Length: 360
Image 1 (cartoon, rainbow, N blue to C red):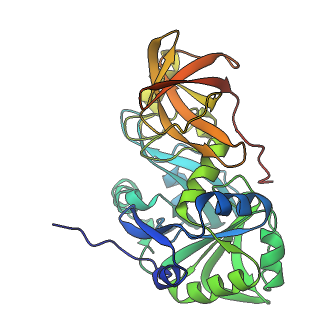
Image 2 (cartoon, helix red, strand yellow; image 1 turned 180 degrees about the vertical axis):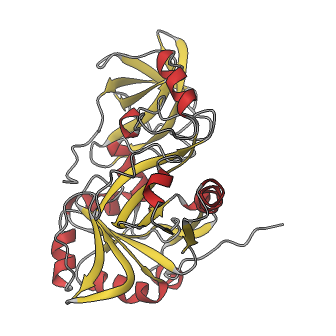
């Protein structure tokens, strides 16, 4: 039986633009409009807009909301200043990543959380089960959408449309246009591309006007294909590939996001793994021609030492790149091979990100 895909409020707009659509997280989403490479380069040089309304939108409120979240998420939410954001994760008891998410503190007693699309309901259910009943958890998945505006010209374009964009990286504020607040809307100085950018979280009825205005001002529609190549160039993790319920943040190189002073779910398992690491993340840049994908064997001296978790062609570097989990720590500059459909392609172990970030 075929499962009917969900649609965002911009679905008809994407179809009118001739977007190639594909199932992503249970939603019928635009993968590309004019081509992944063109859209990728537009974000790196100008400004692209993404419909990411499939992502989860949770609003939590209560006087103890921050301290309660400290017992569940790996980051120190209680010390998060009002008007700022942080990257965090929800773990299982074995230290695997149930989901990675962004946390936005809007007031002393209100916090917004954006989880991944495929995990939005699970995160909602888990938070409701683990947090005190005094914390109200609202699921805004069906009422709100998100437009990501990313690229070096993003602030210029938003400003030309009357938006107040005076935010530093990882700050959040009410979405204000021409001096008026858009009801129940946020402007977030964050993103998934490594470029200067913003995410506009707003009720569904505002999305089409915002999209049309942004496009008219010079922003270029970009699909999730370009979003994936952009994030891979930055070494950003994708849930289900680079992190998962079976891949811990320690293995995935995300220890920097964890506050071990908090007593969160999965902490004991992470401490045990730190003392005896099982996997190591590495970044691989192809020397030979080819395009690596996920789940391809990585070989060192002819022996399989791990596998790729993400792989793509980098439009910026014009070569194949990959993230991998390996059983031994590989030195920077060392040469390994990736088994790409039966071809052993040489790759160099390099430092992340693959491409210099302009996010700040």
